[in-house]
Structures are given as C-alpha cells and as structure tokens.
Amino acid sequence: MKILFLGEIGPGQTSLMRMREMTRLGHLVLGVNANEPWKRLLRVSRQVQRRFVNGGVVDEIVTAARGGILCDQKRPGLLPVLHTTK
Image (cartoon, rainbow, N blue to C red; front, side, top):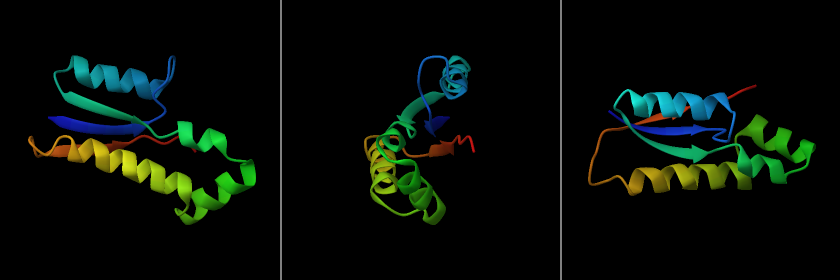
C-alpha cells in the first residue's frame, strides 16, 4: 500500500515512529512534516488558521501534500494519512 503521511515527522516524535513502522511492514510511505510551518506563526495567527482551516500555512501544507501525490502519479492508489495532536 502507498501512504502519504502528514504529521510531525521529527526525531523522537511518534509520527515518525508510526511512519517508520508502516515502512517496516512493507508499505511505501511518503512523509510530509505538517507541523514545521506552524512554528513560524505567532500563537494567535496559528489558532485562527487552524480554527478556520484557511491561511498561508494551511495552503503550504496542502501544496506539500499535493506535491507528494503528484510525484506519485505514476503509481496511483496513494492513501493519505493525517496524524494530528490537539
């Protein structure tokens, strides 16, 4: 199975551990670090964009996810997985 994994993919993060485990189980996994763009915003801006699911960071994450899907067009059937911690 091909999986597009969106989450906080950093050292010591459970998202990275989950992504590695899916790879170990034989799945083709493409990871997008969906948490990194949020770190550039002030807390208020971050809350507004998350609440309304609209804004520059949301667009950046969607573009990264689309890029992952587009680069895999030769092999259709990519399953998107979003791991969030709220």
